[in-house]
Image (cartoon, rainbow, N blue to C red; front, side, top):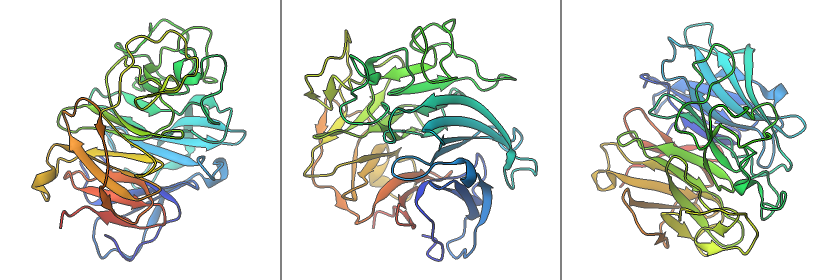
Length: 357
């Protein structure tokens, strides 16, 4: 798809709400490029360029982007990126020209999260069907979540290793919506990523590196691809208040690491081992029209092997994945068009559409 275009380390592609005329591609180095939704398109322009603010390389960089659901009437777009000194930022930017571009000078930093290591930044951001902003963060990096006595994934006074949920309708900063894991009266943890009490921003816990995740546009269900350590990659169907096990479990495998008192850990709905891949890339539940056989099935892949799988939306218990379609691509992300069509973002610089043929 779009064969005349090439990108540098693309990690996401998306469309603005109610606008199927353009595509936006997020490049890890700090640029967001925009182009016409036309297979013959030959040029792109910059939607925004924050390269000078971004530390990029490995698992750092510009890692996520979310349009406000009311865009461009509400001119805000939210970017997630790694700044200098290994600091993750969640920032709001505004368009001053009706949605044509973002003003780099309009940045309002909502959250600052100190990262102890350069990997497992997570970084995806998206608005849920409830209108709140969701943010995925990894466990802080290194191996086996060796942060403190129980790891960050199970430590509830840190934002690391969590899915977060906040209300950005506030005039200043953000508010805590009802239904998160902890009391909204607890002090917010967004100034450094940690707090003296449980962080009220936390929606779900126990993640190693939730690199890519999405909401089913029909049911609203949140699906997360969580990158594994040495043995298993997993897909989680995330519920509010759920704890998905890391570092107590990698997939369904007990790690043996101390992780505190964590009752009611949730198993993944799918997992696969090292013979199939090494880094899961979460995708989407297919709601397009072109591939009827995929309707209602969750499509995901692996960055290293390029394999692509799909599972039923009501899968239970844990499915052990094997085989799959060998795409030959480095699958950094999937993209979903406003029409429900699914795309694959190849880290090497190209974009592909799933056709089913």
